[in-house]
Each structure stands twice: as C-alpha cells, then as structure tokens.
Length: 59
Figure 1 (cartoon, rainbow, N blue to C red):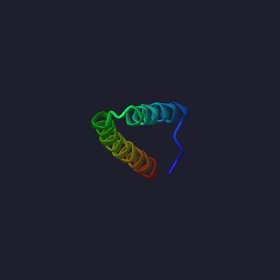
Figure 2 (figure 1 turned 90 degrees about the vertical axis):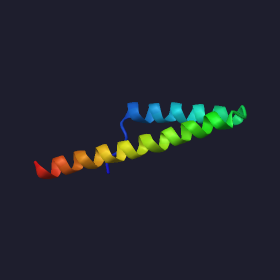
Figure 3 (figure 1 turned 180 degrees about the vertical axis):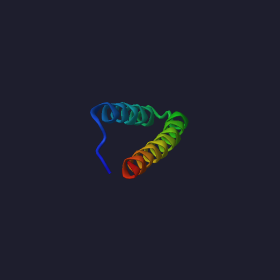
Figure 4 (figure 1 turned 90 degrees about the horizontal axis):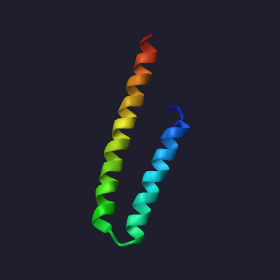
C-alpha cells in the first residue's frame, strides 16, 4: 500500500492533536465522537485506496 501524501498526513495529525486536546481537557464524550469519526474516515480511506489499486490493476 502506498504512503499517505503530505496533505493527508497533516490532516490526520491535526485531527489526532484535537482528540488528544479533548482528552487532556476531560472532554471525553467529544473525544469519543472524534475517535468514532476517525475510524469511519480510515475505513473510507482504505476502501478508496483498494479501489484505486483495483483500477490500476485492471488498466
């Protein structure tokens, strides 16, 4: 699987920092929601990468 590009990496880092900040400030419900969003986003990213790999394999 290919690496994340710089934009994706920066976006992921910002999101992880916001989760860390929420946990540190004891905003646990908010952090939990963000972690659930992260899981959905990662699943979507994996699916997109797999589709791109399939498309490249068929070309």
